[in-house]
Structures are given as structure tokens and as C-alpha cells.
Length: 239
Image (cartoon, one colour):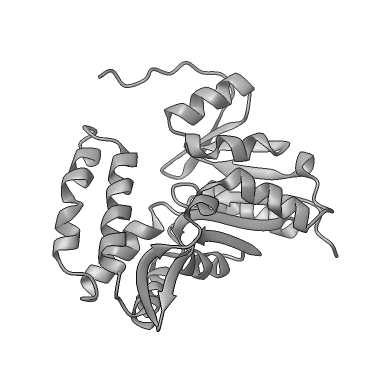
């Protein structure tokens, strides 16, 4: 049966209650593939974010920088082995709302698609483990079985709206008005704007403000309860 509805999800912070890249970096340090200094190099940004003195974007951008610095020259097979262990251990650490939504949309024959800026090899392993049809991540160059440290498709991997448009070209039966998209940051706004059923899930300030203007559903999950927010007032953190 041909699928005519798309369900597209950001992964980190939307399905997975962490970041695939963060968990992979820590696992690579624990396995000895990355040096211990790699963990120390992100400690300051992590502590600043934990203490609400810094932003999550600054933290994750530092993780990306450190990962790219240390992955060059590493053996793909060894990294992939660690990746599979990370997913095996972490795959069930998801939000209940998106976990149950994915299950329902799968039963309704949506084309389930996962997008992440994390490396494509860990996105692929994770997406398959939780039942997705398609996945998109950052392709890292591998030569002679080793990472070069270069990203092959960095611009397209981060352009989620372009990915959606390309999917429609490849699958012309897809009806975006009947499709679902779920995201949690301002970087997901263009993607959410393309579908008839956008959901801002645990949104940051930028996405929350946009969702409120556009009257998109806002869902916040805390502990074991998901709250649908129809109308609310919020304050940006004072600086």
C-alpha cells in the first residue's frame, strides 16, 4: 500500500531524551577511542548549561566541535561497534508522547522519517531500532576505513525543509496538508511550516513564540505527563 502521508520527526530532545551525539561522544571516551581530554573539553559548556548560565545551543555546538576534532583518523568499524552499543542501551530513553505518537502514526501507514544533525551512522542505527522508514543525518567522509573528519552533506543535513521538499519530489503521492511534523527548536520552524499538522514539542523560546503566533499545537512533557498548551503567557529569561 502506497503511503501518502508523511510523519517527520526531529530526534534529539523530541524523541530521544538526550542527544545522540552527546551520548556517542561519552561512549567513545569510555571505550578509549576518544582521549579523556575530549570530555574535559566540553565540561565548561555542560556545567554552564546545567546551571542555566549558558545555552543548550552553546553546549551542543561545543560537542560537535570536539567530536569533529577527535573523529579524524578513527577506524569506522570500531566507532560503529560503539554506536550499536549506545543505541542498544539508550534506545528506550524516549518521551512518552512522541513514542506513542510514532506508534499510532505507524499503524496509520504514515511514512515515518527521522532527521538529525548527528552523524548518519548513529541516526540510521537509532531510526531502525525504533521503527522508522527513512532517516537523514550528517554524512561523514570515510576513506580506507577511517574517518577523515570532513562532513559530506553538512548543509543539506541541517536543512530540514529542503529534505521534506525532496521527499515530496521522490514520493509524489505524499500529501503535506495531511502530514505531521514534530520539532523542538527554532531550527525546525521551516519544516513545521510545510505540513498541515505541525507540533511544537518541548519547544525552546523561539519555537514557542512562533507556535503561539501561528496557533500550532504546543505539547510539553514533564515526568510522566504530557500537557497540551492552547493559550499561555511566557517570559523570556531575563539577562
